Length: 507
Ligand code: AMP
Ligand code: MG
Image (tube, rainbow, N blue to C red):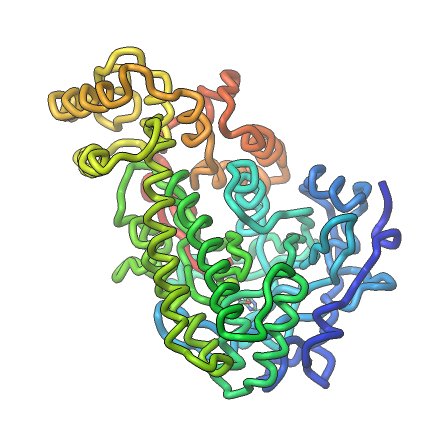
């Protein structure tokens, strides 16, 4: 195990794409650039709080103190920068956004891959607009735990290496209601092949800078999609179809485990189909297709659970549109969008096959699935518990699943038993249980679980974070010792609590 100095640092992105000539963080417009060099703000008292041993061993890093990972020192080989990008926020083009509080330390060459290390919350950049470039402990714990949990759920995601508290308070008005309060400041170091987003490309197209767009596309394909070539339309469409497929795969996993991203703006859509930018995300408790955890979105619920796949299509359409200037025959872009629709549809069927332990998808399964989706919404029914208990059912009777319901007196028993009998016949009284257990996790990071970890950490007790981190490393295992605590429906105290049922982008 080595130190940061022993890593092989690269700066391919800075070397190969155009950047800002000015160095430093004064918020401004940065036309024609993909990045700005900027130094992290050194924290007064950095303390390493959470550490991903797995990510560290992948990088070959021994557990350090919090200085470098808190943004307190730059070592030789690092060349820190903030990325410039734009995006559609809630359906509206927002122009330049960029890394307002994320600073990439550099890229690290490993044996078979290159990974980018990025600090989130380490100070002002040219893209900070009116904000402070900082992050609070609450949102940093959520990002650390959730991105690691998603990885172990087999959901494509950026990962976390560390969480450092900075020894400084940061003021946030959590519900945007005129009640700002100081919170503990923190920095997460996150890791991914790159943090390029749909919006990284859109910004150049929107500002008619087709030469930068072309350079960025070539850089991206060369390093991140080496099996592709974008020298002609056929190649371009093949590459974009690949991105569409990865996006579809990611969203179908979200649907499988009950994850709601909450802010699917095009600046939060990774070019690699990774779950990125953990903010006001949430997990379904009761199976509610219309639910979103993000209070900023409560009136329209654009990013609700049941609409994530369609939003994926909308976002891809905007991303593909930004490629029009590079196409000889822009109409061909429709092929990539159609591919998304087909792939999503097939993945959704595959998902139900796995969740219900079927042998394969038959057209007649459509009604079985539709009836299930409807029944799950008749009364408050916990998604995770329902599907997990279904994996072990011995007799097709709903009373064996009663702990999935919030109020057992309201269970529509007859309807459920009819559905269960139908399913039971379909699987020949022998569902593929191992397939089901692999698709229906027992442990996910419900908002109230994250909130308990945050409440404890804010008074200096990191044990709940550590325990959840451990449990969530094996989300498909029974782990009976944790059942009573973490295989549970949302407790009543969490029903209307800020941070559990209501979240904002304030982080
Ligand atoms: P998000 O909703 O987290 O994806 O953020 C949207 C944009 O606002 C991105 O460009 C972020 O980098 C920026 N941003 C969010 N929070 C802050 C902050 N505290 N300081 C500076 N920029 C921020
Ligand atoms: Mg973002």
